[in-house]
Length: 484
Image (cartoon, rainbow, N blue to C red; front, side):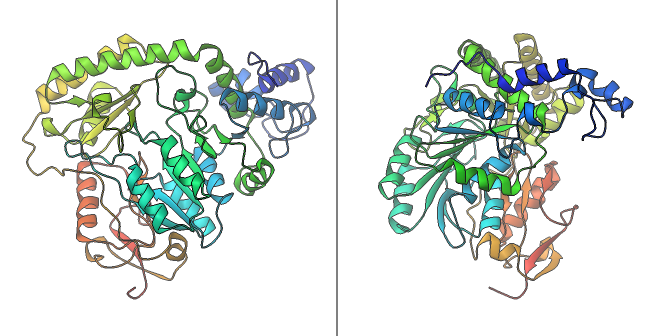
């Protein structure tokens, strides 16, 4: 069945609702903004008038039968999926729904260790056992690469009872794995394939971009529409292939997703999907052109390295997302986080993130050449003003973990709180990570080493925003009682 992609059912239903002049004796208590004038002045009457509760004309996210259901069908067609779910708890909830609907306690899942914390959070919730494929590290950039086909094949052979393989594709930096080949390997062994596609929304709507999870035959994919798809923050899609029981997935989603779905978020997904289908190819061609221009100009400054498809090696870097403006900063003697801070504090430029050796400037359909020129000029001036000797800089981001027990077992164990500096040899009961990108340096169930302690202290010194442990000052860490 072919759907009319020019429609936006949720948005259209809200427009009709506004015309009806309904008297509200339901929640939310601000009553279309009249009960909170300060908030209405800040957000605007138009916004507040459609911040409404589920009702018959507007359907119900937990059990959609009308406009939300129609919007799901349109989204599924747009993404070439068998089913699409509207997610209003962020892509975190989409990732967790993928794992919770696929795995039970004790089940094995093969995955890249350099995953977002939401993946490991899901393992804590369901009790599944991670089989990590440790990534290769790029010798110059110091970043974790994609999943090598051979590494995944070896993990599958060694764990034929695994239930699923999970990939994050693309990575924050734009690196893509061979999703199609890995999917075929997993399916031959009866394993499901789950893809954290948070940074790949635009793959579905642009030309000459890496293959999408759905086109590669993956079973489920989480898509952050609020990133490159330009919907409101916290809005995402969960996509399912033809071999997934969508009704069961909805039951799993309803375990954790709010029963008070925001119509601001829902309508933003609906409108953004329509825009991408109608205008996406032209839009992302422009984004790609702007990003390529920025890369060329930044690479002419000196010391910076804005990397792209020249990295492709056919395996662990099977493809590259050319819309990503990832820049290595180590030759300037500055950590990525230091350049990040300088851009914000000295030049009023907010980029997506900076880590120990790289920065990422997220370029989307909202950017233009004038904005790009400002970024290029600021980077040039930062190099001129702040360049220093690079001696003593940490060479790579990723540390192979020593997994002692499952994330769930560790998280719910009895623990002691001890000084981070004295924790080497103990097993962590909590996360420590820089956010963004939210990839754990240390996760529950992993052995703490001197190298990990050094990395955490170095990250603190450089100004990374560290999150995860109970101790907000990152001076103590909770470890499992006794030795394991």
